[in-house]
Image 1 (cartoon, rainbow, N blue to C red):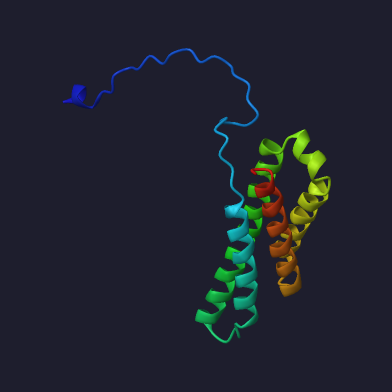
Image 2 (cartoon, rainbow, N blue to C red):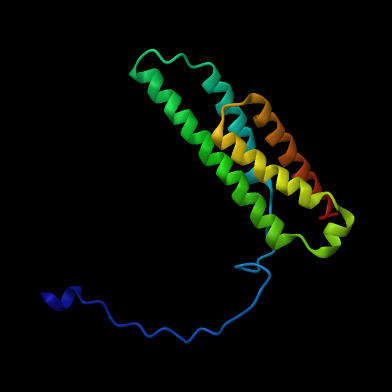
Length: 141
């Protein structure tokens, strides 16, 4: 009976080291994930502002909305950093010299949205991510 559950030993081929501009050089990038995450942050801030914590159910909703807000603010940072570091090339930066500042602002705004419940900061994050997405799509033309 023991032999029935033995897995065969697999011999894996030796892997050669490769170098690419990203982890997997697929060339598929899309800022839609960052845009959706920024919209989610803004929506969670809106929902949080409307919650009156009076019982366990409302406290639970508050905590869940805060958690989702923070997760999506972090997702904005991750998605933008990947595109910024792996997709954009020197010629894109030459055409859009504001790109570094735009990314820096997004990262700071995402952090601010993780730390606070601030509708203005959430709106600024949405606008900055939209600007980033517009720059990205302009490079695809």
